[in-house]
Image (tube, rainbow, N blue to C red; front, side, top):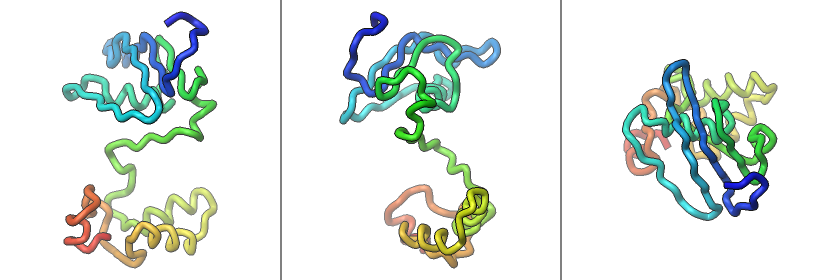
Length: 149
């Protein structure tokens, strides 16, 4: 791609390299992702799929190469307009959903009543004492069988 060239891609990755010490997790990845399309990133364990997604989301800095998201070459400038959901939940497995929500809300000065409102909105019982580590990762019949949603 020529510098300054116009592109229709919402996400454009050019010659992306990400190294961790002597390990190259990404080696010259070039891709363009258009709006309104669904993409699948396939590869063996350790192939760099998560590293690529984390780098596109601005959670990791590339060693070399460029990333443009929404036409902006500095991902941090548009991070409020994109989302990234990692495989791990990043919740405390030994705490209930409500306990997790209350804990994180407290870090931002959000009250417990708002937590109860939000957890109820996603069809979870705010009084459910079951630790989130025991919640089903699927959303469907399995959740209902275990009384989680």
